[in-house]
Amino acid sequence: MSMKGLSAFQSFDLDKFLTGKTLVFVKAEQWDERDSTGAVSGVLGSKITVMVTQDATDYGTGREVSNFGGQFIVKVRDTSPSAYSKLKPFSTEVIVESVERAVIWGDFKNELSVIAKIAVKG
Image 1: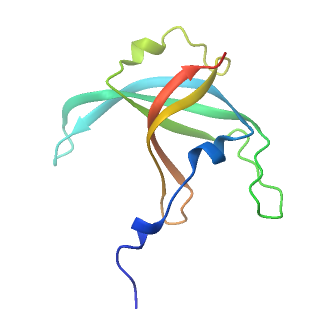
Image 2: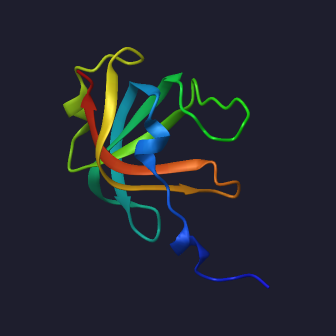
């Protein structure tokens, strides 16, 4: 029998996941709000793609795991993509901070959804 509401008991520790990782800025795009038909109904902020360029995270699996080269999107509320125009793709090191939400999803729980802020490291 399948159980309902199990997702309410899952938790994801983004800080722990990012420990030992170096992230670089890849690109910034507009984050649109869409209505039930899929049409754009407003702008929520920016979608920032970041890439893992170093992964020394201990995954605790007993086997070697690496997300080197992996990319994920951080959604940043109320910030235009132009705010990131001075960042150099694949060069500017960034950090994820002020996390509003970080969840894993997908059939294999291998997708990451993050709403937070992005800052230049240093």
